[in-house]
Amino acid sequence: MNSTSRKSHVHPLVFCFFMILYLAGTQAYAARGDQYWVAQAGVMNVDVNDATPLYAVGTYYGYGINNRISLEGEMISTIEGGEYKDGDIDGRFEFVTLATYGVYRFPFSRYTYLKGKLGLLFEQVTTYEVVENTGTSLDFAAGVGFGWALRSGMTFEFEASQLEATVTYFSLGTHIAF
Image (cartoon, rainbow, N blue to C red; front, side):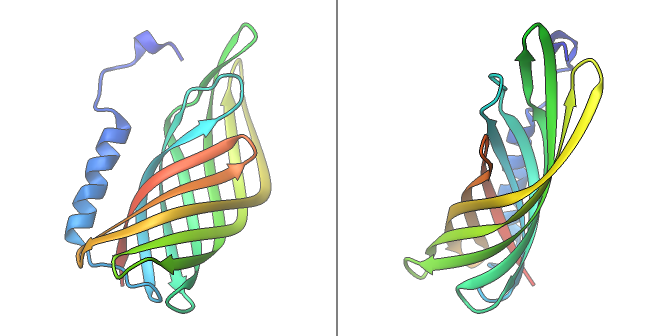
């Protein structure tokens, strides 16, 4: 994609950051052990062909087994980025992932916790070079995170997830409990 042909818009990551701040300020704190929904935005770093970072949005639903162990289903889709050079050919790629995780939260205090997750990830990668090419894979994924409840109506969660050997996803999300 030729970068000179792009229209100037608000950067997608800036938009997503403010969307998350808005959601966090207006929704209830998700008590661990309950059902919860999380909206997230983040950056994927891909260690292949000097690729540019991918900006992504995602969501996941969680169901608490108890106040420390839960199951999560997650979906992530890239919205921009992923340009690379393969020899003389310029290309771009996109990711869509679906994953299920077993999650453990270790509370530091009443307002903070660490999070670890391990699960199974299905991904679809589409590359655009001369022609469009789509591939899928199924693999294990893992991540760690940190959660912080600023007040009863504002909970943030930062995560770093290894989606595959060459893809790391850093995200910020906010909880919505129900």
